[in-house]
Amino acid sequence: MEKIRFFDVCEQMFASNNLAFADFSRICEYLFHATEIILEKNKVMNLTAICTDEEFIARHWTDALLTEKYIPHGAKLLDVGTGGGILAIAYAAARPDISVIALDSTAKKANFVSETAKQLSLDNLTAISARAEELSNDKKFRESFDFVCARAVAALPVLSELCIPFVKRGGLFCALKGKNGAEELEMSRVGIEKLGGKVKQDEKLMLKESVSDESAISERHIIVIEKNAETPKNFPRRFTQITKNPL
Image 1 (cartoon, rainbow, N blue to C red):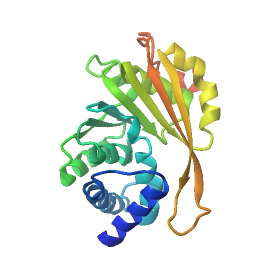
Image 2 (image 1 turned 90 degrees about the vertical axis):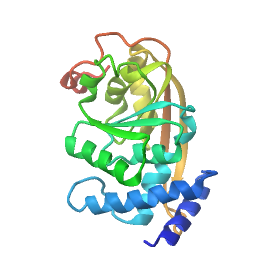
Image 3 (image 1 turned 180 degrees about the horizontal axis):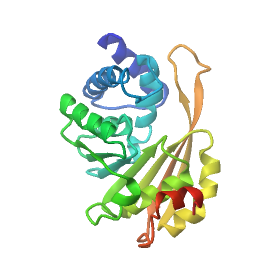
C-alpha cells in the first residue's frame, strides 16, 4: 500500500473508532514503516495471521490504540507476550513521553522487536526475552511498572497471574480482550483480588474493522485492573500450576 493510501485508511479507521491524535502524521509515519517491516518478516517468521495493510491498520493498530488513553503520562510500561510487538510499537509511537519494554519468551520475537525499534528510531522502546512468571520474581521488575498490558496471550485467569505481579501499587494492568472478555473477567475476579488487584473497568467497544464494509465489526473488551495491594510472594506460581489450576 502506498503511503498516501495508508495514511488515508488510518485517518478513516481512527475516526470511525473515535480515535484522535494531535500528532497523527508523526504516529502514522511510524506505523507505516512498522507495517512494512512486520509483514516482510512475517514471510519467514509467524508474527501475524493478518497479511494485508488495511486489515493491519484496523485489527492491529486501531485495536491497540483504543487503550492508549489509559496510559498515565510518563509511564513505565511493560507489554507481556509482545509477539510481533504490535502493542509495544503502537504505544511507543503514540506516546513519546513513556518508556516501553516488550517482553516475550521467544528470543527470536524479542530480538525482532528490538531490531524494529532501532530501524524505526523508537528510542523509548526496548525488548527482552524471558518467561513472565520467572522475570516477575526479579527485584528489578517485580512491582516496578506503572502500566502492564497484554493482548492475545492467554485467558484472563492465567494472564492476571502473569501480569499483575509486575504492576506497582497504584499502577494499572490492562488486558485487551475479544467477545469473551466479560466471561473471562467473571472467572478472574477472585484471583485478581488474591494478586492485589481490583477491577476498575470493563469497557465494551465495537471495533469497526473496514472503511468500506459497515458490517465488519467485532466486540472488544478493555479490562482495566488497578493494583491496590502488594502481590503475595508465592505468586506467580510455576506456569504449569497457573494453567492447570488458575486462581
